[in-house]
Image (spheres, rainbow, N blue to C red):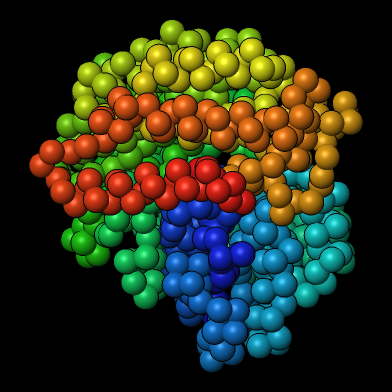
Length: 477
């Protein structure tokens, strides 16, 4: 069969990430469609003719995507939708299907999959969508497309046929070993130059070394998922391949918590130091899963940035959120990063259950104390598959169920906390950013005496973020 995979166009001018653990608009990052690249490789391995269009990266119009779909003439179209752009994405898919009317249309969204009533309402609004995948696509897409080719129906636990939601037999489990997946089909991308973050530019990508997170933080839409690892050797084989074939220079490990399996992580860093010296990368992990030996190994392997979910500077809020960390563990992790020259990123969530003016001030003081390289403030998003949603919903505190506003970068929250209004939360977030960004120590710490280009880039990025805060733009990061 001919199968077309599409990373759909940008929404409201913003790039969108549509992955299994990140499904919403972003502010400035343009990420490769890693899940679709895996799906393409899996489908090609079993003999399908595959094409991929990354309209998000290339900033293609819907009309251009429709033209490309018509030219390819697919039998199947697969595209993920973002939760906060679900209807905009579905409308784009309607135009694409009209341009390729013989194609069966498959889609997937993790949050919708977790909330059947929202999933079914989404499918009812968009009858042109033929099938909704209920499991991670790269694990089941080959079986699904094989069934379509032969006229069979996979069980409902793998997919749902729109308008015919039924219960079926148990579906195929995701592969126990991620090593079984082929390397992503990067050759299907027109170019790697659009992909970037604020720290990393071309040639840049995402690399998956593990999947899933067993922790159950109350605010996380992707919590409590089955944890699986790739072997260290398999990951480094991919890095060698990416550098030799595509000129890779920078990447981010797209793991929920890369250091959960400490032994494998240490082996991974050791092999990277030996086999791919010079690559620069970033990771995300928990503060209680970083020790000094690991910090040194990460630095020697090429790590330049570590992101931590700090969430709050109030131990009470951390405990209520089920985060399972202590303030002293946060202090130690950020001290280790400073000691070993690693850029530390603190992600903070304001407005979690129990939040008050006093706990927010605790957080501001704590951020000043641990002095991260950068701090990302967000107001909690009560995604409807989380405990935070249930908490605020049961208390009648949710103001809006316009899913377009369920984005961490949205300025005005969709809920009140009971002690803080949405407007007050928005003002506190703005004040937290200004307190952090206007400190002389923050500005001085970003100057690199021997890197003029870095300083120029940093100045414009700093000015852009300040302008966003001062001018009250719709999205702020």
